[in-house]
Length: 255
Image 1 (spheres, one colour):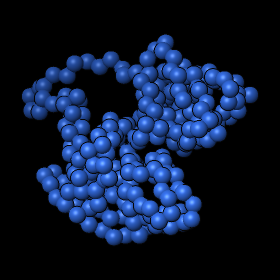
Image 2 (cartoon, rainbow, N blue to C red):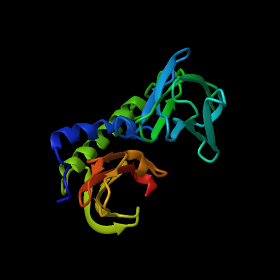
Image 3 (cartoon, one colour):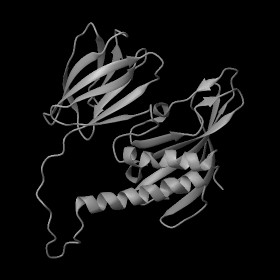
């Protein structure tokens, strides 16, 4: 059996919270990802780390431009991904920012630096364009995009539940037991112990052991890579010799 989460009922709820994030560009725990629904004229107050980097991106798009005061905010552009990395130059005040996405939408952000906050990711979701109502024609399955999204949602939810329970098999997915050590960081061992395959997603289960002499603090965003849609870390604080389970979910096409 694949290793299960500690405090299983609580952690299953935490994993299920990743369903929505997994359908975006990334996901995570409460401080690993913030998703902002773009609404014309709405100002978003966003908590960001005062002394660490924050990644700001646009869901299914690119960040076109930003307007801000350079004495308040440092911005590093990632041209390849269309995102930016932010770091406050001030800690005792809010920072006003205008963000323009590749769709032409403008988003107003009020950044609130927080001293004790770790690395953060913020995703802005552009307002959805008005679309004509779909009608089923001859030969059509009659499924709207909403129906397909719901079906995808349920498939991903079943996969997440199976991973949280450590299921060895189940309807709609297969499980491969593995014992593959991987290089990660100094003073840790990182081993791929299981792979859950569903039609639309792949979920990998890892064990991570702190082999060093210092307490190790983990954050979900440290495990994001291109193609990764959601991450869950069971235990975020590891004393020397302690271990945790890390779950990484990606699309089936990103293998």
